[in-house]
Image (tube, rainbow, N blue to C red; front, side, top):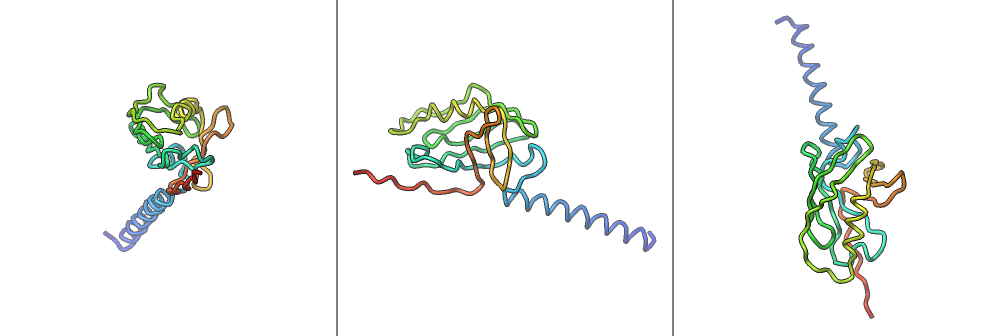
Length: 153
């Protein structure tokens, strides 16, 4: 091999290594990646109302983009099911399988119905925003935000 060929090979290899490390870094930080690749992995609900975490847990969802499956927790029960996604649309299977523990004060049915109603998503500033007909219904983040304790009198 000539010196020029060796230098070209090294530069190309370094370029690929740099691109790969940037992609891995973006996934770890929760930054958006092009297309549905950024959807994959674990997301935690950003609670808006005290009722979002009434059962004492923050809901989360894990997307397996390669296989079209998701799993997670509603804030009360474990859940899993299938989904189909493009770069901006998402459709969850209507049959979501979940455990059946009773969680007083938590409206799990509403949570699951909203999930099934989703028809779109976008990733902005490291947040997953689920939408129905373009309107936001929930925000998710890669970082867990602990629920605030509700004072009872």
